[in-house]
Length: 100
Image 1: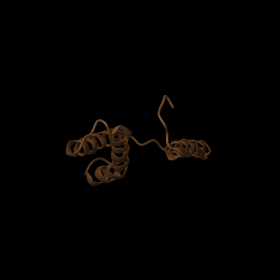
Image 2 (image 1 turned 120 degrees about the horizontal axis):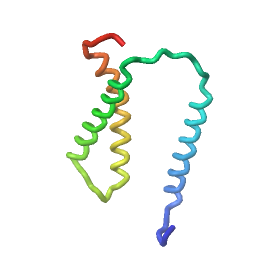
Image 3 (image 1 turned 90 degrees about the vertical axis):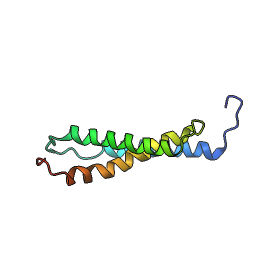
Image 4 (image 1 turned 90 degrees about the horizontal axis):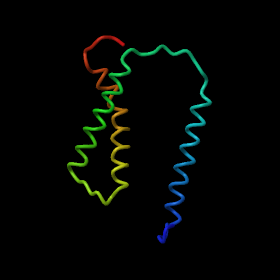
């Protein structure tokens, strides 16, 4: 592509990621609709996730940052986001605050 060779495993990796993403979206769209009570603190939840993601990403980039390893930037941000998804409920639950 554009004068560069692209190894077959790179194409397979990106193709499998695309297929997996499409499968997840289809599965989510097929979920049954149900009446779920809205949580009043959803803003606090997402703000906590964003802050945790930023903090984890900044810590990782402060240890080692190589602008040429462009893929590592995305992997770091995605990993930080997933770690934040795990940590946020624990952080919110551990704080003594109003009931949700």
